Image 1: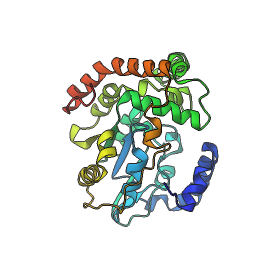
Image 2: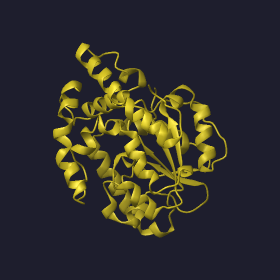
Image 3: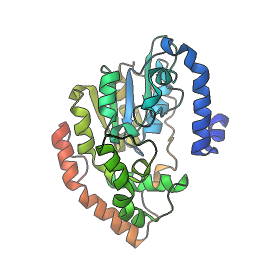
Length: 290
């Protein structure tokens, strides 16, 4: 995929460099925060499920009003910054449909109540990918950006111990800003039924659109049309459907795994079966992965 020069430059920055640049931009936008939109809809997850591509497609819509960076992380890592900080991510009011896409929202246990309190009329788009493939892609992403140094098998084995303290802090009512729970929750993020149950406790089912990521990958035009109609955008299609995932989907399907890694992936798939059934029961959707 040939990236525009701005995207190519951004791809060479570290996560910390990108965050510092983003925060600097927000300081200049904050004086007009009261005149800026809040989201009409949000893409809330799941991580490594095609949210970057969907965000890009929606951002190209003539009436799409994307946040200045895809992941504001407000309802997870930055809630203490306050509403003016959040509004600084969005355009001045001028019509269209304002939105952001932070895949951590689906997983973070405090996000649903925060969103329901601050944005009760917001519509929510949820992309869900086959959970074992999602876990492997998550591990690959953490490895690529320098947070993960364990093998896939070892990282799965280490997950409970790595995330235990953060989970205990959340249960005690403390904040988890940037910790192991958000980085190393490879298996836990695939428990979609548990996560959606929290969202459905504060939002009506008709406020959530559930999209199977494999449908977006296979037929992006039809999937984008579904999303546009749900969020109140007129039907529109981009000239092409570039894959904005890094690495490409072909790279993270597990074709390069050895015998131990393949076994771990199959064990993950087996372990998700009951959860996939609960997901279908909870949402009224078909059982997507068996």
